[in-house]
Length: 363
Image 1 (tube, one colour):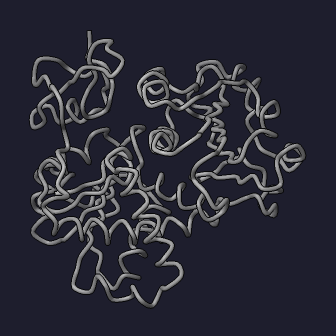
Image 2 (cartoon, one colour):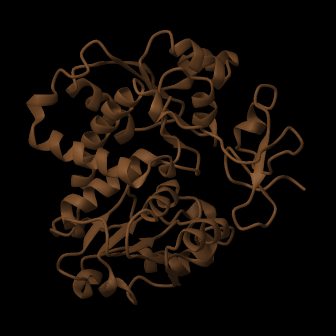
């Protein structure tokens, strides 16, 4: 069975298949209006979502399929203590494919390990958000005509932003990608992402302290919210917050063809006076999310019928049950009675990391 839990679950060829299909769907909407007739998508959303949940729902409906599921875990048997694994086994009786969003990191992986239908990770904590990554890639492709030879600036919360982590991983599959990391000290990209993704997979990066010093170099500016709640010192937040707010004035030095992306929702990190700029692609990005999820649903349902497409969810040497993950939001901790801890050697050769969330074991 094929699932999409991490952006790296897809090969370069498979990414291209999905993006090419999404472009064909955009050009030939009627051609795909009944291709999922009789199929059902289960949307299991354990935390609030607007764009992602409605995007999946709209995607399946436009393919002619049906949608079931929940948008509030408290209205399901989860409120009675049902585990992710058991919920998945129940939903397998009703649906052909599952899209899961969960605040606990590693929950979609546990679901996939217990599923006989494809599982799509629609976001798990601050870990990964691969369908947003597909949305980002399709948007870049449509806006700039390419996914290679790009300088991409990530601005704002790079520490906890799952969309940032996922997109950087996916970009490692393309040629001549340069990454610029624009963040306050407190919200810089985690060390393991720099070492195990950028360094290991050959994605050059540099870190800077302000947007103004690099905006003229960028082909894509990926904005995220600088989260006040992450700062222990409010004075420090007040000092840096305006350095990471995009205004129309700051765009004077940007390339005419540069594009601005944002996973949304925004708060104040992009001023509304930017919305009218043709370089602002974030609302077009939302619609692209529907098209790319249509393509992904079709591909996963197709691959489910092709045993040669099956791929192990967990590969390599794994140590089971001997260590506790240090991340309290990891599913191996929140469902410790049902989920066995699993760690594997870190890609940088420096100790172990959790299979579910990539954190190190507790000391």
